Length: 567
Image (tube, rainbow, N blue to C red):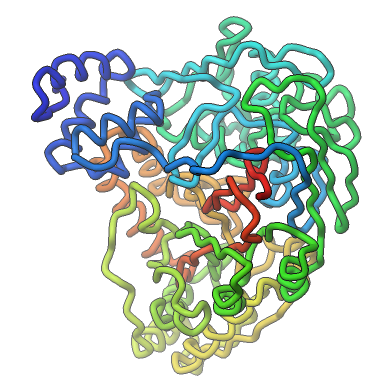
């Protein structure tokens, strides 16, 4: 085992011993930062996942690489408690957090029920209902220590029993939770059914939970911070399984009014909150429909203080408005033109490869998203992910695309139809750009623009669809959800045991350099199998009134408004 290096006398021995007590891999990770083999982002991400607190990780990084030794700067102003915050956002049903499939659902619910972990705007995961955690040397045993003194709104104590009940529900196939793929390291598949492995989770005592994994998994804390991992009361299912009907929570707010498609109103709980007291008396989410102009008009006219998002077409306008603040996040939000590999003609890999070959990602970004993002490489891992391994930029090659089509049995070309949603408009615009790029290759792409509800009713079954995917801090998280064999959100029906094995290996590697080498293999495999055509990653935007303070824009579009206030 190595120890952390530094020009500061005594730090190597003392710091190395302390780090080793947290996790044996941490001293070598610190070595890598000190000698330049590991960059600061990789160090912060991996060190915090292995159990080092975010403040300690930032401080150590500052000493080892000479950079800033603290996390994101706090606001200089003194917050003002009281008042009402209003946000324009689609209000969707919030029946069961385990089955949430949109961040908007969690943005209401997370103020009532809370996660064990949370990932901040800096992409670093921190404890929340968990106080801290440790991982075994082999990353197959994770021990989470829960906060004491946390009380449910019905008066019950929050204990390990609540966590065990939630994980058991998540990994029951009858629940229909995407967590079944998110925590594949805790599942087994028998007779075509995937379910929780025996003994995967245990309550060690009232405030300690231990996870026993089938395979190593570095991303457990990240998964426990994702939006379908909000912790409900242990009797949630027995009492009807409906958060709206029975909104028992540990969070700082209680549900006052809720109407799908109209409004969600929260008020601050009277009982003391375990964490920092929330500032606003009330938080109201107002649904202004799908018309992006209505959202912006509500902010400009003072009907709301914050927008859930600003559409890319509105960015130049918002920049010119002196009473608004534009917030930007470099994110892992993207859209993929995904092909269902079990459905003709996409069951022929040469057809899929021809679609990829016809696309120029950099040009598509300029045409469809004003260049406000990063070109992608058709494998759903990007430079915002710490384990990303850069591959050669895809090159548009219409001659190769036509040759692949001919080899697939379509020498005279091919007509395809892609389904997509009408809003946000960058998605059908991207499909239109793809259609123009595919035409010289002999592919006539028809675009079937659907209302959001209609598309999301069929997104798992349509042969060809353009699907938006939210930001996640780690690339392996999305690969687990979308491309692992049998995963609930595997919309392409892709099933490659070699890919699954590589993914298991990546999840078990602590060293960022080693993990990046395995990620390169994963990326090349997904790229070669051509299950998606992914043109670009988008920057996310939102806007607020200049009066809004204490708000930070999270790339995952997670709105934590309990710390926000109005000047």
